[in-house]
Length: 256
Image 1 (cartoon, rainbow, N blue to C red):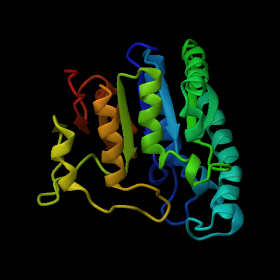
Image 2: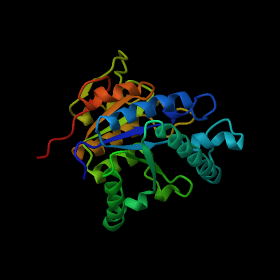
Image 3: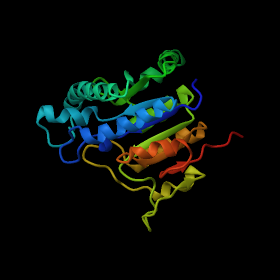
């Protein structure tokens, strides 16, 4: 759809404070600045942002991620509004207009409905200063309508939009060797690294490394280069897009 399109996904742990799950404004300012720099350089981006539920928990006086569906969806309804208001304000400082796109798995469930989403994204991406911000519609999505997590949402949207790369921003530099704790910079074959999975889920995080690798497998098999990178260092994004930088790069599968 769009040449050299990059899908950037930021997880809840990147966007919110670990102590109480509220939005971490300093982290958001840093991230918004880095994404805006990519836009200024002429890159086309889709931004998949978690954080709706996490940013809504404080409104309900909760100390952790809610377990019951109704409260979780209510937190998402409050938090999504807070999240987009914050993004709109921050990106406006860089002359970038945001567009909210909320999806459930059903929206990509048939060719006809996926086509509508594709057309909308294509029209938004035709405007160089508009940044589509995508999230799962957590205020209405129940289990049978969910993507699973925003990692899978990101790669499915990336495939639909014809993206060249996906960058999953998380709380670590990339995939780490469990014995040496050293960063694994390149992964030519995704099936070789499932042994490195750790259970790194946080109180306000939906997915751990296992879910990321499942999503990455989907992406690379669709021919999309994928990275895991540190979301608290978004200044690295420009180098990653340029083929350098600190991340774990998962090579796109070569079509046979």
